Image (tube, rainbow, N blue to C red; front, side, top):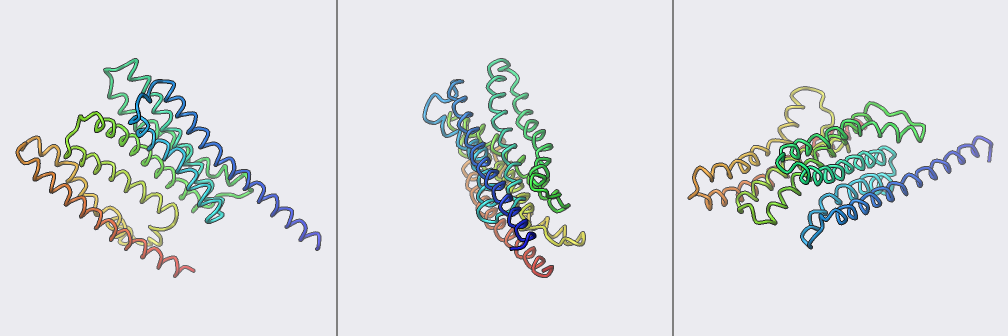
Length: 294
C-alpha cells in the first residue's frame, strides 16, 4: 500500500473509533439521566403507588427513547449518519427540559401551591428556552469530525429542535391530563378533548421531524407548492379543533353530552383517515421531487 492509502486507512479507522465512542456515549448518557430522574422522583415522594409509575413513562419515553432511537439507531445503525447522530443529541437536550420541569413543578407546588399559572407558563417556557439553544449542538457534533454544517444541515437541526420542543410540551401536557384522569376529575368527553389537544401538538412535532429527515416539504420552489404542502400537512387539524371545543359546548348544553361524545369519536376517526391520506400524498410528492433531482 502507498503512503496515501495508508493515510486514508488511518483516518477511516480514527473516524470509526470516534463514531463508536459517540454512539456509546449516546447510549450511556440518556440511560443514566433517566435512571437518576426516576430515583429522584422516588426520593421526593412522587412515586407512592403503582399508577405513579405510569406517569413516568411519557417522560422516560421522550428523555431516553427519542435520543437513542434518533441518534443511536437511525444515526449509528440504520443510516450511519453523523447528522442523524447530532439530531439525537438535540433530542437529549430537550429531554432535559422534561426532567427540569418535573423538578421545578414539585418545588412550585410545595412552596407556591396557589400559583398554578406559574407551572403552566413554565410548561412552555422551559422547553422553549432549551429548544432555542439546542440546535447549536448539531454543528458542534459535526465539528468533532472536521465537518462544517451546510445550510441543509442547519435547517435540519432547527427543524429537529422545534420538533423536540413541541413534543416535550405535548408530553408535559399529557402527563398533567393523565394525572387528572387517574384521579377521576374528568368526564369521558373531557378526556377525548384532552386526546385531541395532545394530537395537535403531536402532529406538528411529527411534521417537523419528517421535514428534518427530508421525507416531506422537498422541492417547494413556488408559493403555490408551499401552500399545497401546508394544506396537505395541516388540513385535518380543524377536525381536532372542533373536538377540542365540544367540551365547552357540552357545558352550554348539558343534556347533549352523549351526542357530543359520539360526534367526537366520529371526528377523531375522520381526522386519522384524512391525516394519513394527506400525509402519504405529501410524502409521495417529496419522493418524486428527490428522484427528479437525482
